[in-house]
Length: 297
Image (tube, rainbow, N blue to C red; front, side, top):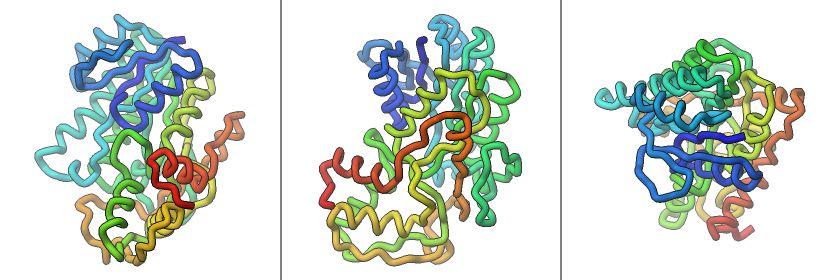
């Protein structure tokens, strides 16, 4: 089986390439930039003709679509909205069209942001109460709808609170700020679960090797928590004495994009379908801090 991975210079795409190759799959990476890496093709997914040419030439068995515009606040800027739609919605549609043309499977990485974030009930994979709160969420939902409209052999996998080695994330920000400030303010009324990209990559490769198509939720296990609680655990494991001050989203008031309060994702479908869930987020954090050389637990 050979797999085309988009967005390999991002956190998740990078780890998916590593996981695929470790397990003996033929993996072809793609991203905007040119590269001397083996088994790599430069690809602008917003160019419909280029996508069709590349996919039909490579003829992958699976398109693992990790490329995305993920700068949530920047997506709200009027000058960026068309670009966000082009990448997350149209780019996804073009890849789905190309996958259909060669009868390939497709894995699309989506987000809890397709929901409105209300209530406390964990969102189910097959929930359809879509009501994105921001431009990013709408663009990812448009990508979901395109995949489901065009394909039968698809996996739509919603994730949240992502962290990995190859990119910026909440943990890196907290470590940087914690080393220069005695106190940090972190929101306490947004609830979810982190997702460690190497753990997610393992699950995605498990998924794409099957025909258990459909919608899935995939974050680390270990229970739901707030960003405030996550920050406290980051500092505890990193041995930093920084005081974390809980504030509401309204009190924090720095974000341009509206965030969902309820990012709880129910992952029970994974075990129901025979897949191994991701390890607890606490353990994932320990492994990540160790990889960064920041673990003092």
